Length: 340
Image 1: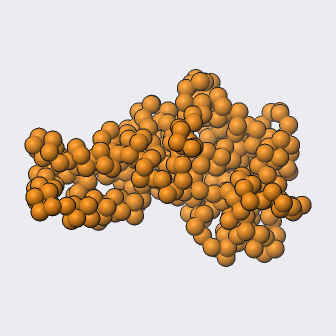
Image 2: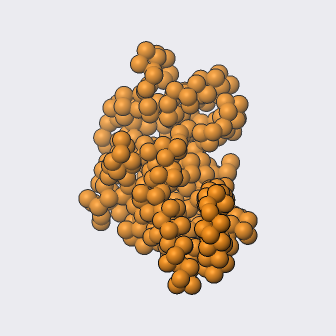
Image 3: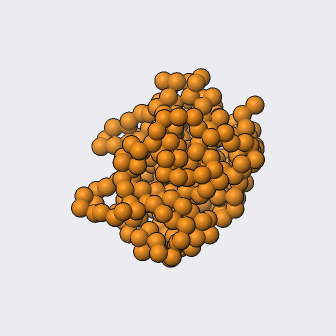
């Protein structure tokens, strides 16, 4: 029986090989990564971490928007026996510094120049932090610092070899300020799988940062456990467009995201003609089980939202306001609750 996240990934990679595990929208195209490629990438990151002196149970941090490289880093940290902590990319420098000190973070991966600036601002107040690795070097061509390097250079210094043996009770991730073992994470995933019933080949769109447990555990780790394909936004600004295009079958988002979706459709209806407003109001009251309401209005609303294929929708800890959940239910979308 699988006892750690790296063991889970190794098993899936051996079984699924060239099947797609994730995609990223880049310059208008969805670029796919296979299970075998994901396994190679996380092993390369793990080897580089070991070469950099990361010891089992040491903490390494991730300060990025949700993107495939953040996945490779997170899984690489776990594979090296380290503890992964994902920091909120919207947090200010002071909050970042506090999180780095509280977690005793030794090595930090930052997304770009903006996140690097935050890290450099607080670096001197974080005695454990010895190295910063930059994923995107745009705008940093002339930047030099002995404790900073590009992701490419960092990975290139890794040496192939056996990864450390870690057990189910080894610490794996810091979530909400608390450490969690591999066994605890896998138990949470198992409960979420039982509750949500995802299927291999389902598609999900990652819209939350890795610092959110809903994305990290009930999104990424759940997907790895079940064969769900994870899809990553071209940028946070393209979330609406990417959702419409992908038409996911699973959608995990926070209350704020669901409230924004409801507000957008409500505003569009308010700006329509009197007849269109009346028809929309009637259709929402009638609900998706009414064939006429479904045909005349609700199918079009689901298309606008990119939810015509949506099978499982969920939030963490607390559901959105009743007006939002009732509206979603009228569209035929039942928003389920998972506990982080």
